[in-house]
Image (cartoon, rainbow, N blue to C red; front, top):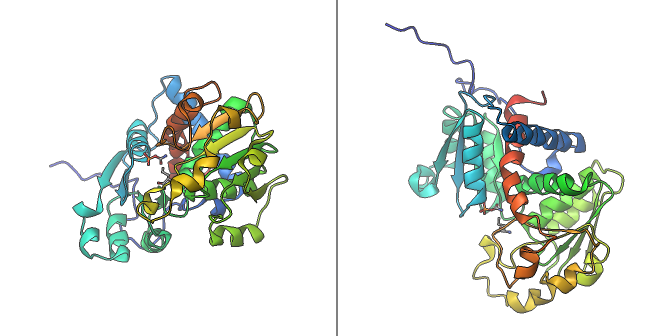
Length: 328
Ligand code: CP
Ligand code: NVA
């Protein structure tokens, strides 16, 4: 009979202590911690492109729970874990007892006995915080109604690959001041760039973000967030122009005439021409071509949207490594 091999990796099978650390929001991390994740992401990308195999997640499993649709987040976490020698279990609430009344604290404690980390995409961030409070393994924010931190690690990585350090640069956001914009704003403060948000006066950034910006803790030199109504003012002289859908997943059917409200914020060639000559165009995708961005911009010389999508894969390897393996 073969002797059982002791488990040398994976969750603490007693469930008694937290192993690793959560990645819930950009604002929870210091500038140095964000920089470490970005460096790790680049190391993983370089290794993959050179054909070197990673085993850093060997024996480890990641549970990924989606309460909303996803293409990029789902595929990039799943393939990323595979490429690191690990494994994912993809879960939809309808497949789990979570979807029929098992509590988040109970689900957190059960999953912590099986998997080494949990990624959650959900609506209400309080669900994510409840999961994190009761899990003994790291929880990763795969998007909530409020924030999308994994996206912003990929976005900064993409900017820096094309244009060098983001510190001191100007990133202009035009359109809905949504969850992606909020994580970008948090990153501006921690990493020292200017983030200009152009949005309708009737649809300002979320109150929680405005409150946080008044007292954000660590602020890197040059880190600031400005909010304005005029997209032209925001984009003029910018190093990068960013937008996102006018209707996020949680805003569908909210009764607002979003098309009329946001039409002046569409990124077209005329708006892009106000940015620096070598400005980048970024979009987290999925894009609604002809709404927030025109085809000539999406497919034009400034656009790095597919590099950005690819970098979700590499960025999240940095996040997983940081959560599970530490800074080394
Ligand atoms: N950008 C992003 O998170 O895409 P998905 O919704 O497809 O995961
Ligand atoms: N703001 C968008 C991002 C999708 C990746 C949403 O929440 O639907």
